[in-house]
Length: 258
Image (cartoon, rainbow, N blue to C red; front, side):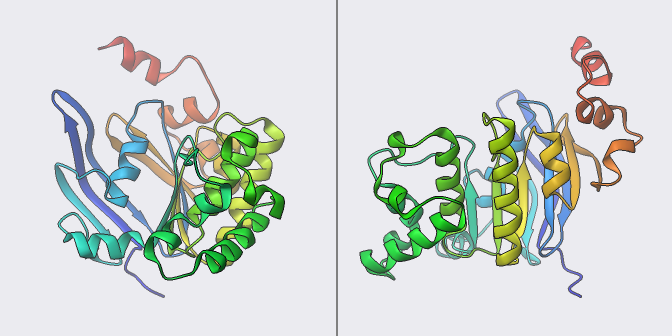
């Protein structure tokens, strides 16, 4: 067994002026593990994903992939690393002027490694793997529902068979049935890929379903991390309040203190 974590964060900080968002994040994610990150809105979860993928540079701390420091990579090495990753953005972030298959195959087309015909064939395969039809490939994002757009975004995130998949609120805004569908698709496709996954979700049921382990980000730090079987009896008041959807609890009291 490889003892080196696939992703290792140590003391990651990020501020915007006087707004200190990440205050020293420590987290380890093992190879082929599915980690779910929970936390209140505006707690810095999406920012942390952007730091990992390299869209935002942290102020300090270490972000290692397979034991290699990534915060100081050259542009060429950063591009190589990003080819090993796939990301689903919170609002899917599809290009509205491109067909769905072109969205899925965007990176493949940019790399010019495949012809348009080959890229489309692969994109259609990925769209079918997430429960869409070949017909949807030739539609624009505006011509399909929000749930279908989420599937297209997910298909794009796995189009290049990445080692690491980052999912930012993959079920946000979806009804309970579609939420379950998307969670099942995530499980099925990620298992087939053998990828390491870091997901952000406010869907606590989904967190239990797709996560091997669950971590909570609060006040800029990871305050708890454990298995999905441990999360309902974590012994941490913040986690308990969030998981059990309680209006009253330490998070409310902490907010009053500011």
